[in-house]
Length: 538
Image (tube, rainbow, N blue to C red):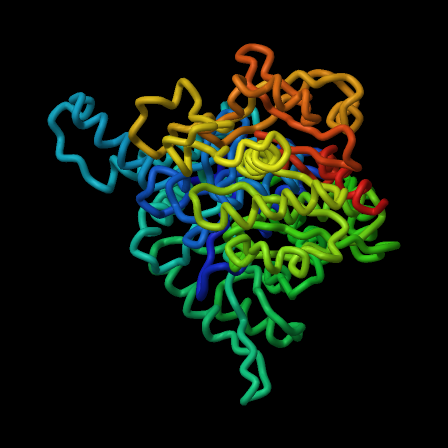
């Protein structure tokens, strides 16, 4: 190990072992929240081992929700957790995939940047990964960079990333890099006890790859005894105080408080030679958690979508309802309804009893008709309604068919030759054949009509929201819609693109072309979700 030296930015790496889906993203975000609460400027990055350039072309069933940043990066859903916990925007540089790394290295090789040398995993791939890690530190712009490494230790795909951690710790020296390893301590019912052997093997594998963890976070369903912590510490070469329990909790937003109770933040600050004198400022966070755990009432919202079998497919929407519920002192009970199962015969049975209905975003024709029926039910029965992206387009198609009597009205995404294309392909999208990264992505401005539901919710005229779509409201039909009672209350000031539609005569009926769920955070719940929940409460 090189002698100790000090860098302006410190680095924490979060790795996982034994099993996937243990919650590395939540632990990373929780660590970031705790350090942030002590006055440190923190940013977080995700390194994903898959060879896709980004999750933009992945099926939600395959990888869960695709989260979109302000600058238009299509990223893993963990970046959503990071933003919701830290209340800061993240960008392209905060999301790295093996596909991006190899694409850059191969591009350099084709240009001759390597001067004829043989291009190898070490040093060329690892150097590119290091460059991207150091990039987010930005010459001291962040006090601490937290980097979550996707997958589990031992995966072939993860090897270059673990090698980078080894190299950086050697190059930067003691006190500048810390490693947190998250593992599983399973409970065997037949034996009636928790087992630490998987954790021991996982750490041993990490050691074989040249990395000694500084702290262990053990995911468990049951409390860990002091003897068990001592045993793990002994076999894994860490201090007993660096063995932290992450037991199942009622809400993910309780995790930072559990980590605080076990002084994980102090352990890491000591490892990084940073002061822990400033007390954590978490009063607002505690109030939020208390509101979640002690709601005064309950409201039931029907979420109509076609990926409802996998809750992570609508992760940001679910979390936005939690934020909005806390702001309204209520619990939002979200009931998923598979749009493909909704028919004319059962729509009342499927949707009766919901105090609000949200039609979710998505792509493709499957389940389209069921979403149209849901929008019609909400409109005709004066049930508060929110449509997001495709959900807004669904509301437009439904209104055209049943109010404007344009029976064949459709989106050209579904029916290319529709005689009434009330939703049509954006002009800039015509001629594009590649799928990845070609949609209208990222934050765009929107100007609201004063007096509209959206204006009341936001409390201002000019807003900016994130997009992920190819199709838009066809302005050739705008006059007819507005005459019949559906108003365009939000427009892009540069292009005239309709961003928001409302039915003023309805209790609360709002469709938005953008994705409000991407920008809702714990401390700043999205105003549209807050107002939608308030309207649903009546």
